[in-house]
Length: 261
Image (cartoon, rainbow, N blue to C red):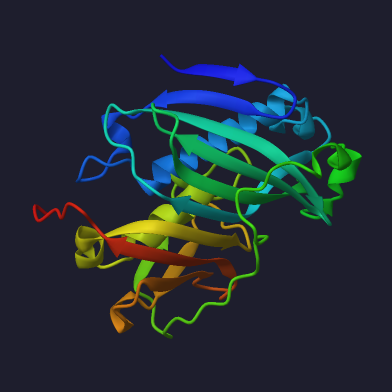
């Protein structure tokens, strides 16, 4: 059974990895990891009285803008993991939050950091987080990475690798594509050979512009142009050519290689 622990600075929740959260090797999917992070961030914000339900009473909502995930070791099906999260302060318009995932022995297996905006739902303009959060309270909090999250510079070819139509199941409570869907599409655009032989050990994403129901999106990557550890991705709206997100993924050689698909 999932368990949780709450205090004013840290929120901790235990999960057991289900079969629906694993890939063809029985390891937890990176998208499932990101779902855990999103879920626990929302739960902690609720506990601190600045969750999305509270904000929506003021026509406001949280929007994820930047994310970095570093995987040290992938948990597997039936493994029990503990996810920790805590706010790390405010930088300009951004509210920052970090995460740590531990295995059942207390070893750190995943680290993550995120930046969020508070957006006015009607005007789509950001609201200063200091009006909602006492940022000074969290300014000295532990940070899992030394370097703050930055704007990503990507280099991708002109022709798209994959095209996507936005469907009903892609839309979240903010009435736009959920951030984890972008990560799923990015990974799906990779050649299967790369996914068979490698493990993603680092993910960086900039979420730049929202996508809506029925939008047509193109995904660009340089996976076929290099055998390097690092791959670049861009998602653009097919009609407006507006960038929805950018991503850089780093891979290492997998310990166990799947050859069944």
